[in-house]
Length: 269
Image 1: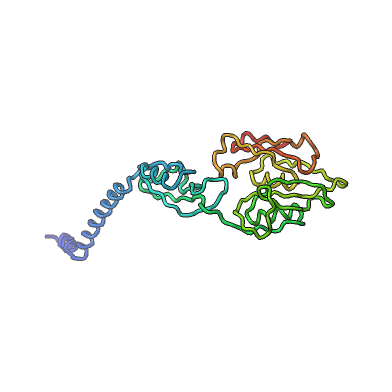
Image 2: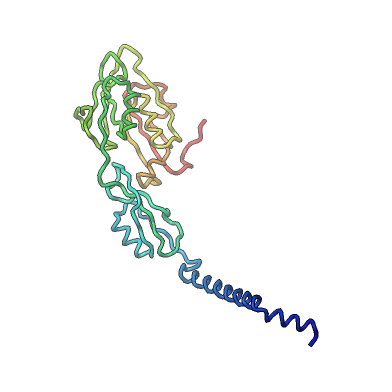
């Protein structure tokens, strides 16, 4: 046997090299096996679409999720007065997302019990100050009721459901508070209609009220289906329109029309 062949045979017979080769072969087998196992367990390339659980009860969502091959879990709660209590408000992943079978869907529900806050004393505040105070406490501004008084836009009374509400009273968040405000007929008692076309719901309503005007009606088109949709919707029409009237009387009413369809919003001139 030649010297080179003897050297090669000796090398292959070396126990360190032999063990390394065996270990490499085992690693390859384990890797291939793991890939095959994961493909089977995780249903490689097989996904299912997440249902829309919005407005369902948790029990209804569990039934629907079970049928779809996934599970749900309540992870958070918020409170919206205009939404059914205990109903599902949000979810993660969102409806229509593609997920693997068995995926956990996190749910945010509308709280069963509303948070309560202390009613502030708004009497003698200016209208703008009163609006800011109500919003800071999570309360809603209702109707502006103008009565003859020496001081225009100063709050005279605060009402809830047509009854006087005393400062310090515990009330649920989003409770609507009507304000009786003064109007001096001998001074400037007119205002103007703001242009809110293109603005979102809360911003548009605030802009109208801060001009000492009331909301007559809020109208939503077919694209707005949920409470959260309404918060994202924008104004595509208002009555009166800005060009219809330069000035109006304080306390006059404005109707706003909302949509999620950006193509309905007219371009600004």
